[in-house]
Length: 412
Image (cartoon, rainbow, N blue to C red; front, side, top):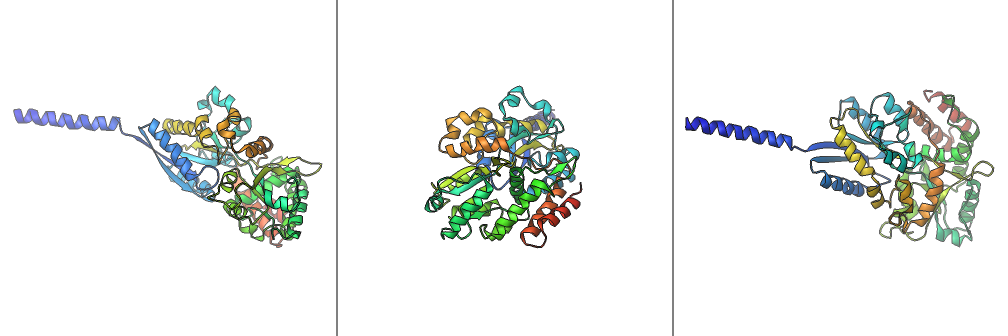
């Protein structure tokens, strides 16, 4: 009897222990991030560590992939029935993700404080068809970076205000023998090239779509591609630009091998870091130029958001993590590689100190952000335009013919 009682008590203890362990078991979230530009991997890990300290019952597994793999990783995981709880997504994907039920609609989770405190332009990152599919996280556009020392040696007092002036200044720098190829871009057959093209489309007052159909073959869309081809053929643009992504642009610029570069916010901090860069302290930044009679500045919406996948088994914990990562406190603490989404952050010395030039450019550039087309068929359209840009740069097609072909192959 004593033995039986002992066994019952032992069994009860084991069951109780098992139930207790289950009750306090941590929730594991899988999160997918980008391994380049904006926040560094170290920053994302530090932000996540802080969240885990404040939420010891939640563990976050982080995965980093290059931007070029972010979309396909998300979609493939979704097709297999899961994989990620939280994903980073580009401003160009909500239409497609909404149409294919990739992300949860989180409109009812947005608080009045979030709604009022986040910059209006940042919300466009996660909005589609009146619904919000996450929180904006990376607020970004491309800026014109310039080497102050090279411009000074060339006798140039101020950076260019128009794209035509950029070409003129680059020619002067080249003619003086200061830099062989003064301008560097990210024109590889990838989304990077579309971002540069969009910046120019915005400058020339072009449209991607009209009544849902391609409209980039004429007007500002055509003028933008012609400018790219002329710059490439003139010898003012580094010819390797046709193979470059943003990190290649950063490497060339911070090695002192270019006078001008178009790139995202993150390059400002890294190019000014003496451990990273040969041009630290010589880096200038202004909004991308305009076109006389059409625009004063140009900018592309390169922002990104954090969303919850529709297959996540832990949407509440996933949202808690997203709220932490996008909070004003977190963003202000890591504002050197990506600027905050919160309007009042731009009056915080912790954000502005040491990067006053960047903040000044951002206040203008972020207000002028031009969107890439909002369509569920964006991927098809982007691939068609990437090919058109490459063929035009290589002289295989005229800009007119290349864009007409892209319009036919866009799926629209």
